Length: 254
Image 1 (cartoon, rainbow, N blue to C red):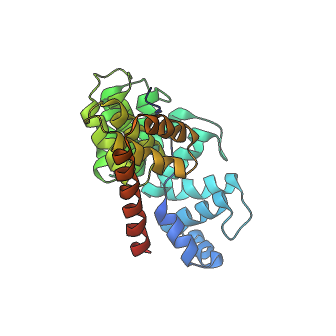
Image 2: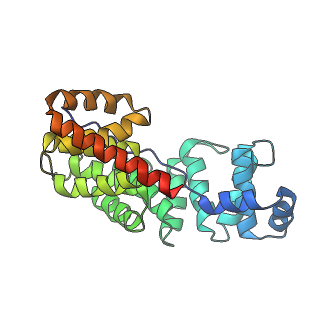
Image 3: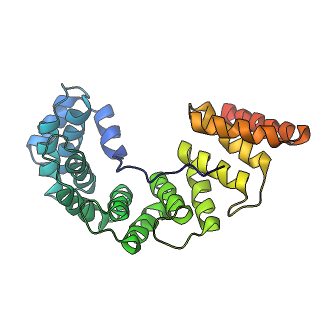
């Protein structure tokens, strides 16, 4: 049962901008942005990038992100890097993406650190350097960035150029899986099914694969069914009990 995993693509995570735009009238944000407020400029860029209160316009999003990024706003720098990395509102330019990610990463912004680590992992915009990739991903993961945690899991469990360490990979997948990352849940289930980095445990394998499958991951569903074929009735009952407990906990939180 081969582990299914992949390095996550560069991801935009900008909760600061999301919260501000949702809470404020777009005209208020625009007036503040025009006065030079970097936070408002970032929010306005996000609004244009995502059609929040205005018609979507990636070029205007980049314009406002740049104004804020040049003032040192880490969220804007990250979003501007994302625009360059994906050719959204700006010419596709991986080197520019790396430069902006680095500016935000050096300020301690976890999303930028994750993205910079992903660029070093894939060798896009910079020479491939797994030492640097680990450095930046670990900084982001230590702050709880779920994509960085997932990417570290991949680096430690796949043959990506560093010695495999399935135990460390499983630890990072678990952290990301607990935050709801479907790919991490899928991969963690596979590790339990194979006994790689964790004790071989069909109950835990079924548990994590079913969680991912319930979110629409067809690969996880296929793996779960293969695991189920190997389980005893008591093992299956225990896995179902754990899943029911999980649902009860979720219901209490709501």
